[in-house]
Length: 212
Image (cartoon, rainbow, N blue to C red):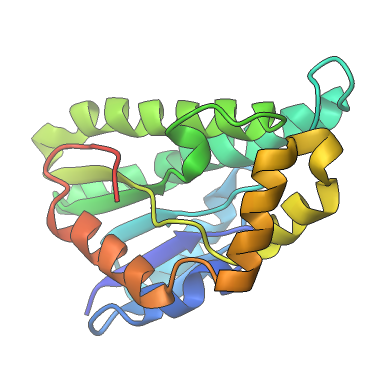
């Protein structure tokens, strides 16, 4: 069975899709901005003896609106969670993966990593940076038989959708607000599709690449 540690700000965001992977044991690790998560590692290793897979899924939108109007501390907090959270989790698990000469790291990129989003500057910038970090990490770890991949699972109906709707069209634009309302009505991406995306990422992460 694969030993999976998932970095998630909301465990419910990843519990279902990862739990469906074949015989996957699971330990969820919640990241708080600014905390180096090394204290989670001994607990993980006690439970699993080794770490085969890290899934970096923690994400927040951060403040929405025009850059000169949003709260700067909230903007930085989004970078801490979306980018630094992924970096810190990688720093925590890579030594163990190097010792066993095996590991897979999945970076959830999200829509912010693929294109700019009006009113979502903190989210878009931090997610794009997380994708580039994953690409760089893939080069550094290739010789150690550790694969890194970036995956965009699609639009899920999570707390981030509720945050988007709460922001309203004045802060995120009419088009994004209308799209969020359609997503709420349609149900968003099915969890089965997310599971397939994660499984594909695990099978085909010889080199890091973004995509569905």
